[in-house]
Length: 598
Image (cartoon, rainbow, N blue to C red):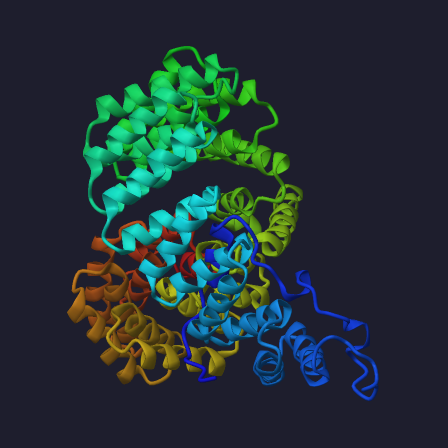
């Protein structure tokens, strides 16, 4: 037999869609197979040529072990010797399909059907194989014959409709679903959705909506049909009709005793948000809130939308009551914490984020948000070498949360790993900080920022050769990135090496963004390191004009003023740097030195 190779990747899907599993060889009889493994016993009459039975046994064993190609040799031999055995034929066809010879398998089933025309299972499998072999018309004829014999299960209905669609007979396919729905009213939802999907696929949206509406008149509590209709109406821009459908769906499901939750309205809000219409999404859920109905999911989603829209006061108006109504819910406290942060209330934000983490300790999102707030507002305490009792408590808290978050954060959550890196860096654990920065750097959109942090960490750890290599590699990977060029130049200035090269890199960055305060500061710092204090002062003044509260820039400007002999101005600027959160030990030493000289 010539094996005409065909693709077989969807045979399992089609078999499942048909609703009835295909017959396996073991379901069929093999005459006198008790001695089939004893080919050296030719005296026993087993009803088949011994070679066929033996070949079948070996082929079937190989097939069950997944050795498809090897099984074909033996099953082909068995089939040649005993083509009339359904068991051998079925096993051979199975291996043919697995090896991609679908057309050959279909021919075997053709003969099986001809020999046993009343076998429903064999005719069904024949229809499936014809469909997979790219013969929709022949497959349709077998399906229709099955219908004439009383077979009309959902799998066959779906197969018939699919075949008609493939033959460009879409209206006939729709009629198949209509007839099936009339025959089996309990499956109205299933058939209506299938017909709707077919109409949608062919751009017949108005007909799809009409069919869904007709289906809902029969089954008003159907959530899938209602959701499909709501999605269409949102896509069509008919918000009024979408809101009416959502309300009708929720009322019907409430009246039917299914649920009191506004599930259809939540779906409508979600679809509006997915389309970018957050204002109307919030308005839909605000109406639910104003009606007096309290649903945890609706309250939380409304708060999210309000925060996203910048309506922090409105979010804070509902979150305390919602959190009190569901005291064990972590999400509502998390949102309350975010709202407090947006209201410049870091203490309140920390309180609520701690509560959220206590209630849902396995959810990394809440713990990461808490760590982010700690590193933003308590960095000095986290970095203290000789911590006060209060600072020691904060350090222990940050360390514990970071350890737990590291176990649960998604490997692809680059922002989460960056925050963990910042926390560990503040705590002085530079090795762990580098590890998380490197993990963040595996995500393309955060690669530059994360690997720059690796370089800075290595520099802080005194591993300057490694830091330099990281930055050199990064510049080779991103030669036109101004942030990379500036960082490489600044690093060289910090270690006092290759200052000419550092200046070239930073000027490259400035050509891209000439008013960037960080780049202006970097150039001023390079000039300072070269002893060109007057020029350094000019660039550092320009940097301060762009970023007047940046403690690093203020420190650099203060040092330039000191070198120019302008001690009083230097003291003033250095004190400003200290007040803005600069490095306290280093700045204090500079200030005390200047005060002594004065």
